[in-house]
Length: 457
Image (cartoon, rainbow, N blue to C red; front, top):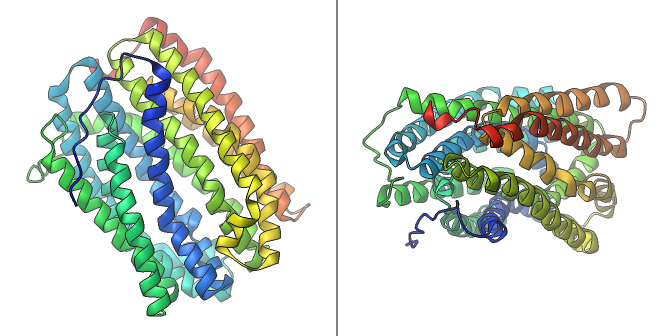
């Protein structure tokens, strides 16, 4: 499969809004295709195996997110540093960041795989996964953990590509592997009756293919982000700078996942039908988050280049434009989901009781999700402007503390799926307030005084 090289481009000049949209749309589409990996699993299980298999796969969604978010956060450090060096004209340092990032991805991915295989069943038991789906859920989770190293490698590689403004080639890669995953799902489940194990194996193979392709692209690069696989090295200075940004970002992502795991325990207590309903709606709703994440990623790369180039007036505009456009795009997606709710849900299941329960989440969580770009973009700005821990602290108090209080004190009094769902929009509002204050009081001052610039450290 030959993919035309997408040349890096300057994001420090020209109209801001077109740059944001052109950067964000491929990421949005790429994330949507990544979701096809999981959605194909859900659809095949729900349509060809049954609601029990659907629930078995769904019981794992937040567990996988916990691990995935850890290295997605770390990869943000790679994105920011390379983009900063491009903006500052310090391209000689890019090589060390690329080599360090890929070497770290190999090591980190393998560690995650080993840990995951050891604790897979224990996690499911701890979360109160119903006995009737515990065995298939464990099989599914363990197979996914075998493929985790490939996911880590792909996402670090994609972060390197995004840092130069290239969001098109990751889209092409995920288009190919997304189709591959769907084909393999049908073969393993429909033809060979492999059930939950079949969809997990299909996902793992697709992830492996995507990681191989991104490695090949980086090896064949002629520019500053060219990867040399024989240089299996970690440069301490580069790793330190990546971790300064990446670790708080990873913690923030993991905090979201931990809070969602707590919520999943409450959902598990409501039975298999509710788990299946939540799984179906969560997969549909995820497209609103993909939109949010796309504009958050756009803010990270475009703001990083402009901050490195000391274009501080543009930096302020970039943050505001990313929020505005992100909210507009999310609103359009939510409107489409509301209008075609029955059609979307019927893709996952034909069971009417599952569909009706899923609609509770639709109106309590999906509709309010249009405000997510606000806290995500502010969080991205805080990372780029060297205050990532402010966002992490905001997430800890605004998300995990609030949601834990809600699940342990409010849910037992009003035990219903609606009670669980309401926790989401309230926690988002709290996080928006914290993030806004942090950005206005701390980070925005740096755009006037350039108080701290990591590329000069």
